[in-house]
Image (cartoon, rainbow over the protein chains, first blue to last red):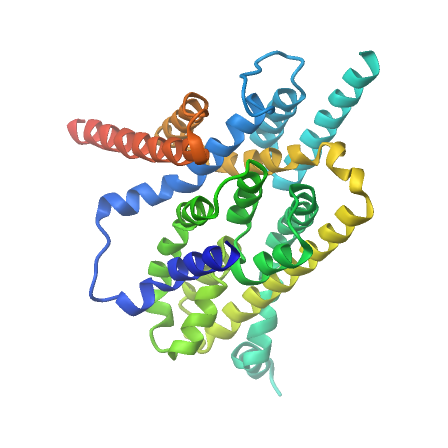
Length: 104
Length: 246
């Protein structure tokens, strides 16, 4: 698995060098590539936040993942600082999880 | 030695270029540190061995896809699917390679391979910035190399630290570190959200990921990502057409 991952990653990063000059990217493909990182990451974020048990949709406000994710969105949107976003939302998430564990 | 001469020697020697590259990568390293440590910690909780985790950081060396791989391993995904997902997640690096082609033109194949291996988001961002400064200083590949070596060393060190922490505190998986991944990803996605097509892309990807959540082999991720990319491109087309009308 790791060999495969290493191979495809290197192939992607290197592939352009030997074939350059003989090949032009279609404009549409170039356009699409820009959307790949946010689209892929969002497709990972949303299920892990809203379906944290892997099966059912949990939109309740008692869902600590949802609360943490909202905190991350607010912090990220306000400060655009990755480290701060991670720290604040982790604290909110853990605090919320802890508060719930204590109450119930 | 007069001042001008000093600056010239400083900038043109391979070693000083190397360190300059490392220095300019520092702010990005700060962001990568928690990322690497969390990766190491999560890998233990995902059930990956020490060797497998280190192997991934040493040979794959692509943070986002390594995280995605962990979430797929936890879900019990078959390895061909993981490799395919890695391909999709890292496809953006092809654009980096394409950008670097003119800059690496005069280097020999070995240099090209080495620098291509280290073409992470961070090093690309730093190196392309340096290459675009038209100051005629030769040997910028040493600058690129410095950035890459610094990123690589840091990434592997942080992975070790995370692994050690994960092994030392087996209960660490209950501390809510599994939330670290979505938290990190949210922090990465937000700066992208500067245009309507980007919003369309992200909203579509999120919605589809829920609807397609039940697909086998975590195919939902790929379907959702493709839907998001398509939505972004279509939206961009629609907006540019409107502009042409005005």
